[in-house]
Image (cartoon, rainbow, N blue to C red):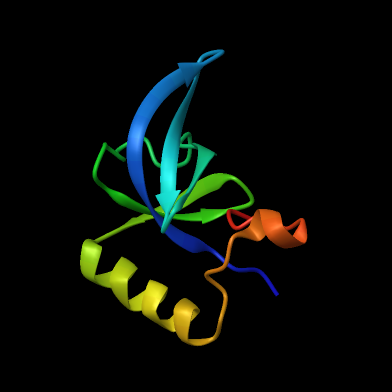
Length: 87
């Protein structure tokens, strides 16, 4: 099963001609490619799957999704088990 996780765009940068962002997932920050979401800006919430932002969502949608993930126990630090929250 695939899972896209909501995160907040904290900063943006160009990396070899591609748009990337630091995206915060709770207390975890990861590099995310923004090429599929060219309208994303700092402060926006994006859905991230395997390191790519695949959709831009509003703050309320992000909060609802994060609440569900927390409820089912999927908000821990993925580095602790070798996983990647953004994938």
